Image (cartoon, rainbow, N blue to C red; front, top):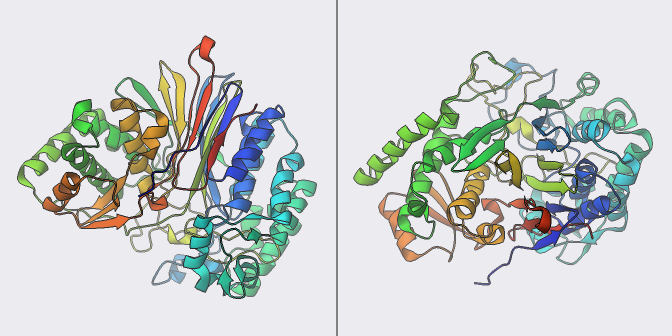
Length: 535
């Protein structure tokens, strides 16, 4: 097995870490030009939509945790997409829509970054789009991961003329090293640059999308686009782990999951959580399992029943009770009864940005599954999301039941770690329900194991949300750890040695000393990303 080293960089003037080295370079250049973290975030996001098109883009949604240095203020920016307003519950399908234009909710990413730039940015939108337009027009080299994901989705991509033309060559996936050119996507961004981001909802671009929806059976109408999904600034979810503060994303995201996992594990000594030992791995696995069960049992939508906020998952006392439950399970090897959602594989992306003024943004954005609905917007180039699959379809009392204008259930957890109320680390990950479990393992290694950020991200990962299902990176765990999982009833499925399925952490360590004022950025080696600061 080849050992992978997490790409990293150091700089005194800020840092960008993303899952695409093209996007990272673009963001670092914006910081060099004098832009702030929010300007860089806009540029990075649009470049990811070009160079990592399977994971995010204008057709999806974006969520962030933000720190404004001048105001010393944290907030969560909720850029959820919304279900079509014309959809009626009596039209509910027997199975969730996952493919085709019916699977798409109203995209919110253009509105998210429009809001971010209008209120907190400093640069011109057209200038920030310029590098992404160039990559779409002139192309970039296809990497091994993108090639493998095109291969995996080729049967559906072939059904879309535009996707087939751009991502396939004579019916076969573009090979690694081939240049991917997306002229339609370049045209779409050029229009936005000239007319402004609002054109996506109330101009010529929206007209083209609405016509595409009519022609191919989509559900979005002009009325939907008139309801521009402007993001909402929400209060962050705050907690503590050991001596560190946790600032993460509230519902409809899944910061609650991360907080409960850490609340449980905080009741064990750091030595007991050594992830190189069978006991440390088993305790952590049970914390994952019980927490994800609780999230299913206690769903929370901040726009529905907001007067009845469920705080059990974030209660320290509840974490102590779960710890005792874990010890009883280990003593008896008893079965844990779970009623969890179906396994999901949301193919999200995450990036983190910090500037020299101390501003920070951690963004997780997605089109849900790999290549979203597997259909691209005709003559506009971006992939429609398939977030219509991220709702409850049976229980009408569920906060995320599929209703007109409702937001989908999300697993994002962009996070900032603090010491003495000062940010010291920013991180996040893609991976649906695996997001919080990936973040937890990195934080355990970083805080309890005193590992460097790069090593904590490089180390092996596992995930479990069901007693009978365990996902592990092959050839990276000891025989003793694997045997312990097998003896306690886990059905183990081995993933790749550095599996992108098990999260992709993009993180930045923030400077703490005036005489050593340096940012350290680290990109997860499980994808094709990098970290870079301005020179």
